[in-house]
Length: 83
Image (cartoon, rainbow, N blue to C red):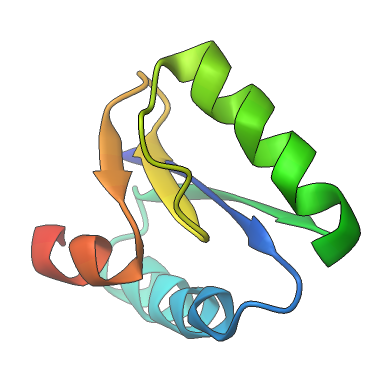
């Protein structure tokens, strides 16, 4: 089973695009699991700093997508190319 974590700020338009994409993926692959974390814009900078520090990510993408094993996928465009 594939498991993905998607985190972004509430004001980010790419996050809304990812939400729609995730719904379509779930229809095609019921085994895929997605955890969506949406932070208020005012909390985003400190949150993404903590995420990057915890996982060792160098680029604070918004939104950021990674697998539950810590494998970084990247941002929205990276996810489109990856999936």
